Amino acid sequence: DAKTTQPNSMESNEEEPVHLPCNHSTISGTDYIHWYRQLPSQGPEYVIHGLTSNVNNRMASLAIAEDRKSSTLILHRATLRDAAVYYCILRVLPGGGADGLTFGKGTHLIIQP
Amino acid sequence: NAGVTQTPKFRILKIGQSMTLQCTQDMNHNYMYWYRQDPGMGLKLIYYSVGAGITDKGEVPNGYNVSRSTTEDFPLRLELAAPSQTSVYFCASSYGAGSYEQYFGPGTRLTVT
Image 1 (cartoon, rainbow over the protein chains, first blue to last red):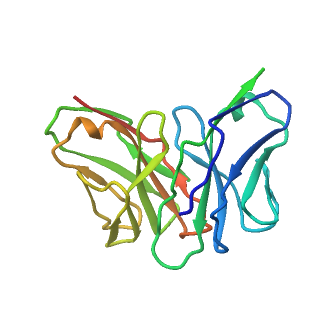
Image 2 (tube, rainbow over the protein chains, first blue to last red):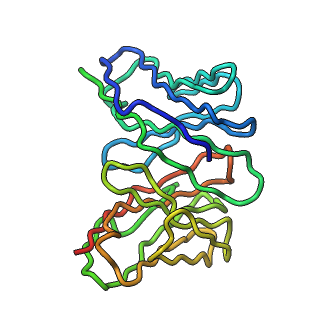
């Protein structure tokens, strides 16, 4: 999997939007952009993924740059329960094999009440 | 629907002992994975399986063995435990590779002393 770069930590206030950036300048045309988060003392959980177009789901939105070299995870209204480590991960299209997710250190999101 | 379950939740081993970490999923997923997470780090892939009877090494397989006799179960065996294997172990499953999300279990915290 290609490498991603994320800030080590970010801080935001409760009930405000949060924009978590991710750089992936070596992304290939077949790489999906995935986001997972890990709450304290829990296993990671899936947040969202996309390929080229912006994506929305009940948890978050994913904004993908036109050249696909960066993306931003958007939490529209952060709550204290969103405090977690957020991982940006690139995954290749299914093509045989079952490569696991390659986790970096992620961004530690701190939410202030 | 329990998802991915892992047992035990905690375990302390002495150097040289052996143990098996259990993982079961009830989502009929073909793909299953074992990861380890050291303090302050992202997850690293140990082994994975694309179906019953098929397993393959990940990034850090040394000191571990796996088997996959059924779709539901994917046990991880530690032989001759060493302090370097002190970590949190996560099992995950998915419907497929690439764009498909992975579902993670709650983890097993292992200490080797």
